[in-house]
Length: 138
Image 1: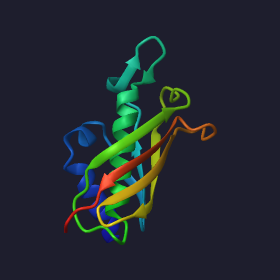
Image 2: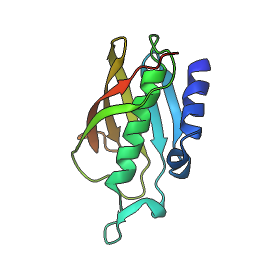
Image 3: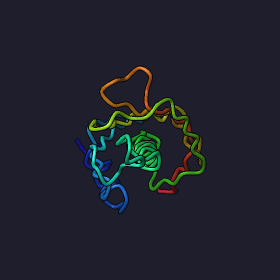
């Protein structure tokens, strides 16, 4: 429960995460899942109703950071060093998007994370990501 509270506090202090309605749905040791509900204000293409890629990017970045913070080796704050996102397809209009991230390796100063973003149709995912994040000094 402590990890989930810490991850939710992390999300709540990021203004754009609050504005996008992000909610932590699951955490574990070096794992996080964050949901972003569909909202018309996030539409990137008015003709199709598809959510903006920028909103999906923000969701994935935030989820990766939360995964780093929940890793047993985490010592404090984190920041994105590098994040590569590959978009597989548009998210379906009207559906919540859930990002899931795993911090799979951590050195003294850098954490390495993989993530996916999915709507109700998980295969293929909306996007995948790999990234490197700072490991705080504690």
